[in-house]
Image 1: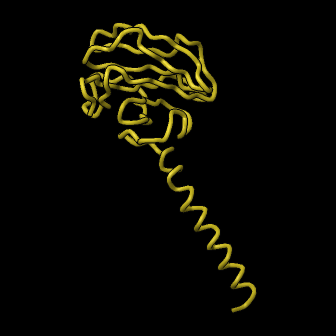
Image 2 (image 1 turned 90 degrees about the vertical axis):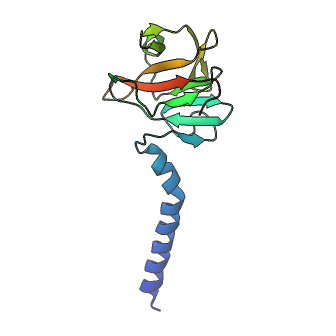
Image 3 (image 1 turned 60 degrees about the horizontal axis):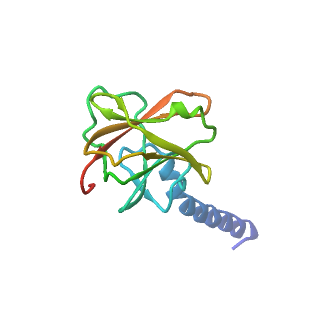
Length: 155
């Protein structure tokens, strides 16, 4: 085999290894209607994370407020921790948890933990439907909506 062929083979092998190694991280960045389990909040970049007894999951946003509650909303227990990771945080009032269908604001304690905004409900959440509103950073700005169903045992 010529020197040129060996170099091309080596370059192709290196590119293949890189592509295979980066594929899981690339897939986490693509829009996916289903939550993705991750090792810890903030692991998969900017976004919204829920942590409960089953682990930590990254949820993907709805770009607008839905008229009807989404049937595929993620189910959590009342003790779930909610995290937002952003490149640039807006005023804390731009992040909130609301009970549906009344849109009543749920009292949450907001604190920064390791570069993440943690929102902890001040009382246990009763079963029902909720939406988390989160300011979207970057050039597009706006608000993302994350829908949750609180159940006694999660999904």
